[in-house]
Length: 421
RNA sequence: GUGGGUAUAGCUCAGUCGGUAGAGCGCCGGAUUGUGGUUCCGGAUGUCGUGGGUUCAAUCCCCACUACCCACCCCA
Image 1 (tube, rainbow, N blue to C red):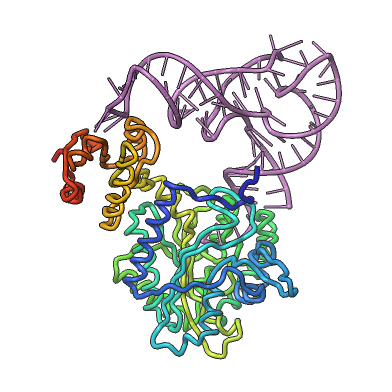
Image 2: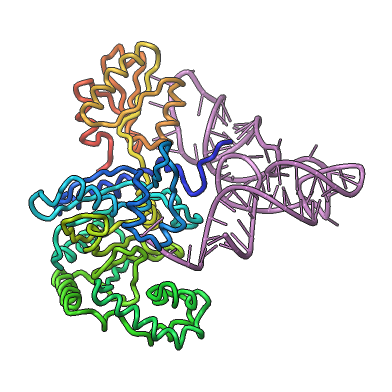
């Protein structure tokens, strides 16, 4: 048997109904904030991610699907989409368009990690980028927008964490300071931290080993090291979130794994997700465009939602979210009735009803299937009905059955004929 | 890349102290000639993950492998 490759899954109905709802709501929110869709290729030159995401990051060093094209150029399946969006922004000179460019995307990303709960090798992200402004007002608006998506989806029990990781001026200074401090205490920490203390001191702050927590608490906080530019920027973001009544927690230990983040970073975590409890991550990336070779600056901020994880939380908390809907199930009896059913079904479908016509099997079989697929109504079309020029319409919820003419059919479906009030 | 767990029907699982397997749900048919949901009756489906070893005999014991799940790492 040929199976889907490791870490890549088939999404089947009725589960796909949840995915569609998530994507529909996201698009509605993006529309409300004047964000417009961008679709970039799934394959890019490997260089884009090496330079954009960071040559030393885990994503680039060990998680990318990279392969040689037939002309020997190195291509990579996108592990994330921000680098692509910035590439497109530069390539198509979107800086020449008026105002801040507000773009969103929905699509699959690829990282070759060991799969586990909430982590797949092909996973889906819903993300947005606001490019062309350094204003903290944009940061606040972007964060507000993600909260709006969660709210409209009815997701509860999530927590918004924010931080500022500084910029090219203050972050290197902070890292040095941290490295210094760690020299004296690292040997008392877990093995991973001892390694990180040398390779990537910021990640020490992220350590979850309980014994290390008191030590980490005593380490310097980035919040105390922000420079004259970053500090007021972060203060303004917090103020504007407070203005909007959006609850948040400042998490000074929040460090993101992609090199391009600077100043504002944020994350949304949710319980019931297992170890991978981060359902959204984002932040500002003011130097990214230049890193990718742009002559013009393109300061921006963006986020991406782990759609797989978001869908998981909704499936857990809203069991009826995965439900398919069918307005009418038509059961014709005989060749003439089948032909007639096709014509009537087309009419109703054009009026926006979902209609299914039974093509084989007897009436009883039709009723069973209609019941199992959850059809609201069944229309029976047999000899009696054909002769009378009327259809039998049965409300599957109440069991009530009435006779309607072809002209009355649509109205009967709309008004919920046969239902109890 | 590392660690732990699990592999038996479509799904969730039981089971055989070694004698080639069962339940619930689901699916199909019947009781019902033109009426579903409840009920009753009946049915189909498994190379018991793969390969090797021990044995008269292995789904069960031993070895190896593979797959899946969870966790670490890291991230969405």
